[in-house]
Length: 172
Image 1 (cartoon, rainbow, N blue to C red):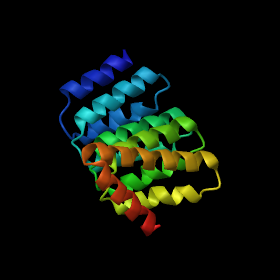
Image 2: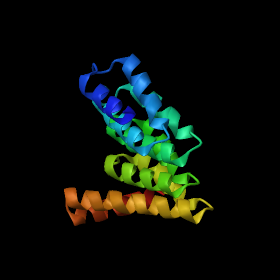
Image 3: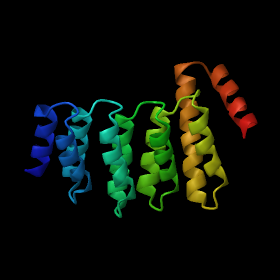
């Protein structure tokens, strides 16, 4: 019932209605995965891309004690943020250091989808994780960089992706 209710709100609610955003975003921490997923889908429908109220509501869940809630928040953030939202991208990049693999993987997937070759600030933040003492953090950062490079290669050409990789290496 809760799952259906969250989904229905996304279809009938007003765009950017802060009351609905608050109510639906609280369901991201629900104990049932179906409710969390429906709430995330509803919130993506209720909030326009770049809506700071919704973004902040979701970012609050990045500090939740349960890893599955933090992972859901990361996956939802990528649906809400604008490509150059530095604060949100930094919050997602910080999740590369999370103690739980599910959160690190959500961060890898999300960052690979949203960061592009021209975003040197986000790329520098991600590459700085390569120096972390924890090998799982280094692995997550490396996977993110690899996937961003792969996305660039698909979008442009491998030659320009190679140029991008050399530029990134020289900036480190």
